[in-house]
Image 1 (cartoon, rainbow, N blue to C red):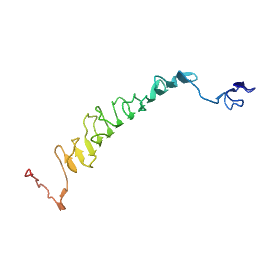
Image 2: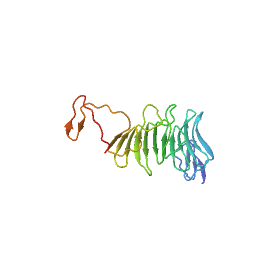
Image 3: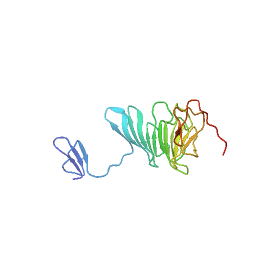
Image 4: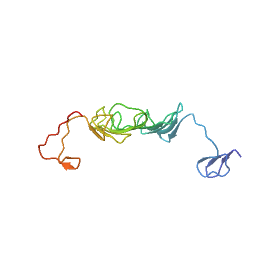
Length: 173
C-alpha cells in the first residue's frame, strides 16, 4: 500500500506501519513553507534556493544559495550575525566589511583579527597574519604598532625599566 490510514488515525505514505499522525517513508517535496499549526508567524520556508527559519514573524536563520548563514539578518558573508539595531555585531568574513563591526575575523590577501569599539566604523585593534598588533591602524608594521598617543605606567624597554617623567624620543633611524 502506498497510503495507509490506521484505525488509531495515523496516516502512512510509503509505509504500512506509521508511527506518527503523518509518517512518510521517502522524500517530500515542498513549495513554500511548512507552518506550525495555529501560528502563521512560525515556519520553515523554502524560497528561491534559500531556507528560512522564522519564529514570531521574524526570520531567525537564513541559509542562502551560496551556503552563507545569517542569524537575524540576510547573510552577506559565510557566517553573519546581527543583534538589535547594530549593522554588524560579529562577523566572520572572507572579505573586508564596513559598518559597526564589533569583532571581525577576515581571510584573504591581508588576514587579520580586528576589533572595533564604540560602534565605530574603523578597526581599533588588529592582529595580522604576522602576529603584529596594531592599535589605531589596520596594517601594523611592527610587533606593536600604535597610531596615536600612548600612555604607559612602568614601561620596560629592552629589559630596563623607565622612570617617572622620562621622555622617549626617536632619532628617526
